[in-house]
Image 1 (cartoon, rainbow, N blue to C red):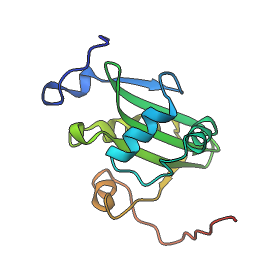
Image 2 (image 1 turned 45 degrees about the vertical axis):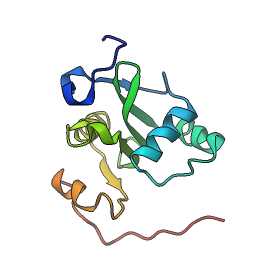
Image 3 (image 1 turned 90 degrees about the vertical axis):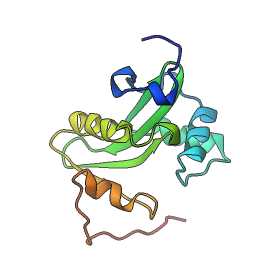
Length: 144
């Protein structure tokens, strides 16, 4: 793929390169995407962001040339459950199908597991549109 990014108005899903792993990522790139998406994460702490990604079971990124336009971060046991921790897409390319493509790539790599995620008020209807079902049997407690 060319290293020159296409303008968002000309971009198609076929133009994107999906990468697995941390290649090309830096805390600054991740934090910029999270701020712009917006994804509510600790974007003022580069060390914490990088540790989140180094500890992930699966990291997928979508690239338009040398520009990151989407990211998915997953924790999984590889058998029963996979947890989609983060899904962020650059606002200029939202509604193009980048998030859907990343989720489909996650589902392909995590076959046989149940993909679980937490959403926010920002993305409440999006996951239902993609075929996710709301569950009520979950509890959350922050470890201190």
